Image (cartoon, rainbow, N blue to C red; front, side, top):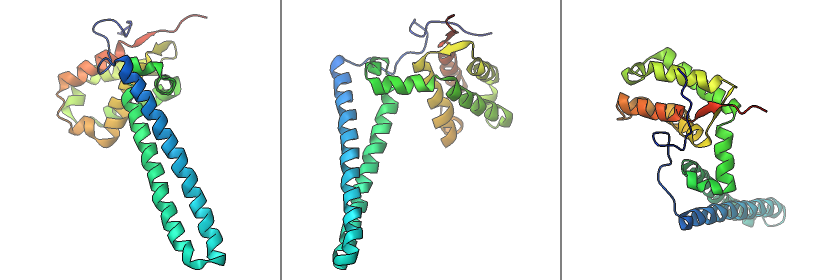
Length: 204
């Protein structure tokens, strides 16, 4: 049986916690700062590598320090990128943060049918293994979720799509769904809440 419901109503999937307007502004500013750090450090690293190459021909003694410096700054750029990606992922479960374009775009991307097919395959793969009793206990809900994810006639609320991705991709890929302390009933509750996010596709 398919579950059709407005994801914003009581009992449906809700955000991890309400964000104040100030918190949303701070988050948007932090995303901007991390992006700037990523770009600036990336540019400095590229310049350092270029200078290292040039120095190797005219001042070989400077080439190694410049190269090492470039590696250090490049590492900072990567760290800023990872921190920004992590922040985006955490904000994507907060509906209030959808006023931030990047957050909203990420959530909408998770809800696209291409990504939904990936989630469905992850579910079916786990169901074939049946390694964990908590998954066995939720076979019916997981099978129904996989079917709904593959159904192009259904749309999925972006926040529910993010929650589904976090449960079935991030946690599953790391084994957290299997090794976590979540009891079967909590897993079932999360799946049911995700399924509340499906609704028939609007007719054109």
